[in-house]
Length: 195
Image 1: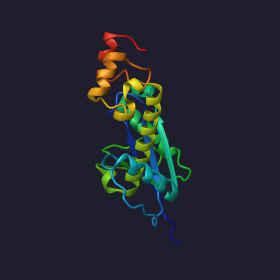
Image 2: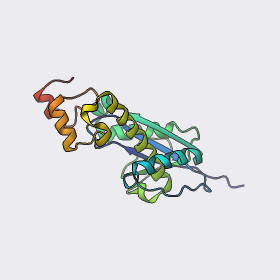
Image 3: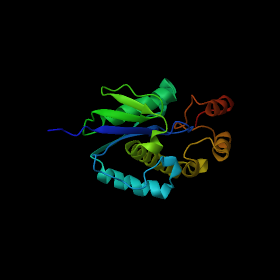
C-alpha cells in the first residue's frame, strides 16, 4: 500500500516593513484538496485574502502560523529572522510533513528535506496558501497596532516605508515595535529618542 507523502508549503510576510514581527505560515494539503483563487498574496485584494484564509484553514490537513519578533529581527537581521519564523511555522504543524517547499531562494534549517522555489507563492498552491495566511495574520497585527497608535497610519501602510509612515516617524519618533536595525528607523533614532 502506498501512503501519501505530505509536503508543507511555506512562506513569510513582512520582510520589508520598518515595524512589527515577520510572520511565516506553513500549510499541508491532501492531494485531493483544492482551493480556487490561490495566488501570491500580494496580487490579491485584502478582502479576497481574508476570504481565502478561512477556506485554506478549513481545507488544509494542517496549518501553522509563527513569527520572529522585532527584537529577534534586530538581533539576527531580517533574513535570519525570516528563516527562524519559517522554521517555527513548520515545527508548529500538528501533522509532521515529509518535506517542505519554501518561497524564495533558501530554506530554513529544519529536519526534513526542503526545497526553495523562486516565485513559488505564484506557482505552488501550498506556498500560495502559506503566503495568504502569513499576510492576513501580519496585516491583522498591524491593524491592531493602528488602534493603539492611529497617528502612524499602520492600517494603511502595514509598517512599510511609505511617505506617510516616514513622515509619522519624523514627527512622532519611533515606537518599541519599530525595527532599530533598519536604516530609516536608525536615522530617526539619531535625531530623537525612542518613545
